[in-house]
Amino acid sequence: MERYLIKRPANINPTSTTTNIESSTPTNINPSDSTTTESSTPNEPRAAPRYNSAVPELIDLDKLPRGPFKRKRMADYHPNQRDQIRRKYLTWGPHQPRGFKFPYKLIGKKNKSKRRFNPDWFDQYANWIEYSEKTDKAYCLCCYLFWDNVKDNHHGHDAFVVEGWNTWKNSERLVTHVGDRNSFHNRALKDCDDLLKQDQSIRAALHKQSEMEKNEHLIRLNVAIDVCQHLMHQG
Ligand SMILES: [Zn+2]
Image (cartoon, rainbow, N blue to C red):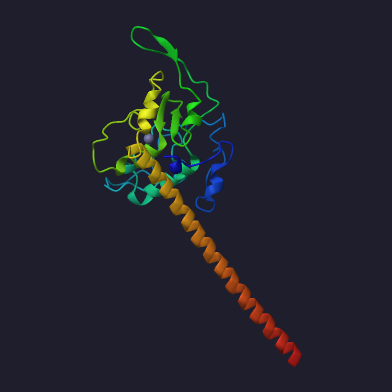
C-alpha cells in the first residue's frame, strides 16, 4: 500500500505540486495551520438554476466546501467537472485542523469513558483521514472522491464516507477501513494517485511543448541574425 501514498510533508504548501493547473487556489491551505476552519457555506451553484435539468451546473471550484461537512456527493456534480473537483480536493489535501481543540465525549454503555479524536491519527493516516469541526467526526477523503464510481454494491455502507466516524475508542476501525490490498479504500487511494500522475504527465507534456517552442524561436532568431550579418557585410 505504501506505493499508493501521496507523500506530502505537513508544512509544505501542497499547491506547489500543481503549478499552473489551478491558479486560483486560495492561500490559506496549509493543513497544519491551526486557523484552518471549515466553511459552513453549502456548496451552492453560483447562479440559481432556471430549469430542473438532470445535468448539474458547473460550479466555481474555489467555492467548494473545504471540510467534509455538507460536501455534495461526487455524483451530484457535473460529469465533466468531477475530475477537476477531485484534483482540487487532492491539491488541498485531507481537511486536518491540527490546532483544533477536539472535544471530549462519553463513550460506552456501562463503563463510560471520555474520549476524543486523536490528532496523532493525522500523522498515522496522513493521506486520507479528515476531521470535521462541525460534526466532530472523521472521514476519508479518497473514499469520498471515488465512492460513486463503484458499480458493485458489496462494500455497502462505510461510516468514513457516509455519515462520519466518531467511536473514538475503537481505533482498530481505522485499520479495518484501510483493509487489504484490494479493499475499496486502497483502490480509491490508487485512483487518487493515478489522477495526480495524469496531471504530472500533462504538465510534463506541456513543459516539453514549451521547450520545443522556445527552441524553434531560438532557431528562427539565429537565422534572422545570420541574415542581418550577411546583409551588413554586403552593404
Ligand atoms: Zn477510505
